[in-house]
Length: 575
Image (cartoon, rainbow, N blue to C red):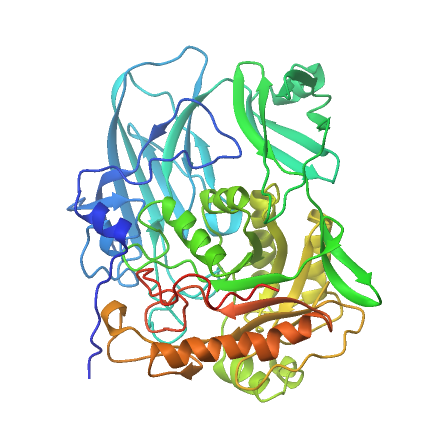
């Protein structure tokens, strides 16, 4: 029997769908490095998909960027990318000026999986770039024309588990969701000088922040030696010595969920100028009255979290508008939560900027890479066999290298965001291998954050926390043995609102309730009886599954279309 599926829309998604001519995602996509002038390439593009055999792309369809072709907001219907893994995008745009001595950069925040050849005004080049492994794409385009220019992009998506893949699966259902392909984040252009600012990295303490400015371009090495750059902060210039400076506010104001204060500054280097920001805060692990605790700004902090999958009914990986991130964060805060565990997905930087501004801490997962086994990775560990499955886990050095490359790119992208306080390397054994080596590699890159090496089970030697998943039995606090205890997944209680559900035929979750009232009462008992009493005993974080419903999975505190299931803070889990 074919499932009865309903296309849902959030309020923002319905508004965008009703205005097909409106350009989506108009916010500058990189708030940590904001330039004043940029060209937004989101909107209508020519599109086609094929099996790689046609010599010339057909471009017989139109797609709305940055929404993946499988999504409703893309404008395509019944797209199945596994049958046509070569995706072709074409956009014509007009330049009304060609600044002397400037270079034109093309940026793409995210695409799945790998870029093939790019063509600009007929000149073909190959960036050889996977945004899942190497982070956002930035390439210099060949000399543009005054007037109309033509940009063509080819993307390859062959599926499989050899590259990071998250929760997407060709045969979606249960805890696995509709797969995506192609461009799913903003595409934009900007002019930069011959030597330009490529990155701004901030490493904070409680009193100051170390800023490192990285340059790109043919004159980068010379510029680093000449000391031409400076930072405008707190009404004065701070010189950059070999691309580095230390900024010290007169009266430090610390960042926290209760007071998410951000300091703004500007970096100048030659003719280039970018705006950025930082926050003063520290995270770590320490003993408090003999109990291992997670510390924020040197003090114990209980992280009350929700599992956040980052899926949207009309855009899949891409919400209709970046303001949707703020909507989710504010909804979580109103329900008493101060943390989101971003689950096996790296979001656009605008999500983390919203968390920085609104005071939502983030436990950030790396994206799983490698095959999943229901028996090995779910059944046996749930039954308590959490060491035996390691005996038949196949290791792959090539897959490990791809995962390590992705992990390091994620750290480079997100480490300047104060909201990100914890990295999760592996979830429930999905693709888990060389765990101690992964911990060492991540700590070498970012020694100033908490690292959860193995969320759920298959615990090994090197990890900052003892991380547990408990669904089908009451949570009993283990005795802390040198590591803070984190309940990184629990709950998953289901109440399904038929008026706001994607799949009317099937329901997935861990305990089903037939009425909203029974479900809400069970949630309150769960927090009151199993979570709050254990905080004093050493429980340092608890992540409820989950923020919102996603497709068949209806265990969210919000519906898939973000309608509220709980009103106000009646079930506030605050301690």
